[in-house]
Length: 531
Image 1 (cartoon, helix red, strand yellow):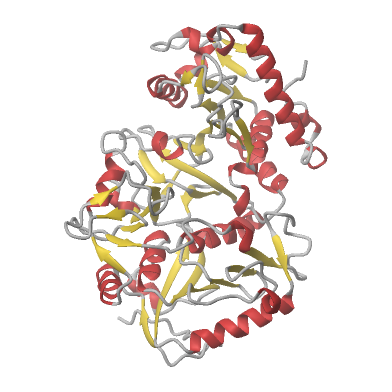
Image 2 (image 1 turned 180 degrees about the horizontal axis):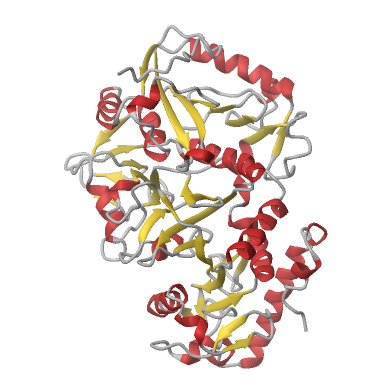
């Protein structure tokens, strides 16, 4: 059976005399990558590659074409920067010309989204074999009989060798990620960081799905023994991947999902995990993927002689990554889907040491905290900087949200209300004082509280109202030190706690001003209260 779509590159206006490799599987792509000098095999089988100077996303080089389709539907600003149709036309012409000059191309026809009713057909054209393997690993792979009839809806062309011209193309530098929603075309050039392709598809689904009242989410998700789905929102470093990787629960996915009327579904067919200082003890399932053929490791240091990996070495990048099919995780869901959620967990690492380890939220408070997307980084390394730094990333994924945040916030609120979903705010940050004075929240306590929230037993206990934030906090939980549940009591100086809490309240209030006019009064009333 042909693995080549009846829609050729020529049919799409991308004329090329290159040797074209269509929908190759992992073994053939690894073979091509190694023979072309794009990467090396490590001792136990993974492909090790380098992404060059770009070891993460080039957020400032991403643009959306501003035209009749997007003028009123995209939330324009720093995150969603505009490009004129004229600049895009020049960029596209130069991309197509560059494509025509390649002697070899790799093409994958893939799905973005695991639920058949809500997925998009995405064609990805690469000059690098390992990029083609990466995106094949990360997106949902069609069955062989689906490929011949595959009609691409959206196309990504990724040419790291292409250098943009700021004057001719309206870009900021030689690097460009240009999204044209009218032409359904995404052009990526001047960067070899493969995550740009994955995030482009995420951004695309974030734009399309709200039109069908489907909630797109930057989150991990898993299913409990009773068929109860839980969603975990959280920014980097809050424990999203670690806490959702629970041997007693089935993993739906670790990064990007949709919530429809009937399911929570993974956008992807793979995982993209941070590898730096990965511990076999703490994360055995993820660690095991670094010992398997089919995994792609980016910027991981390897001994050239023995081909042994050193996951602790950050000399090439702090953001070392591994891409692997989701089925490499032993307890992964077979179809990347689960029922609609029973619980939503919003994770924050509060370095101010103010927030309780767990709080129960009303639907309005959930929307407030979702739009806020709060976490706090520890104090910087500069001399004299002792204060933690608050970070607010709207919807826990601001860089990938093309529409106004209130669109996603309202969708969430509606879905919570409709399904009677319980919402929790979990602080994996500091207790007993802020960073530098207190200590990190014990993971054992976090797991016990999380388990009590997920199995429903936490609901039956006594709660108090937090005087600063207004949410409900459990008074006692079996197996958890009650003192930890009342952050104020863990500080040696309660007045210092009050002062720090009010400082954090003010940061929340100031940050939310940008959304105030776009949300209902009852959401505005869910704000923390300033003294």
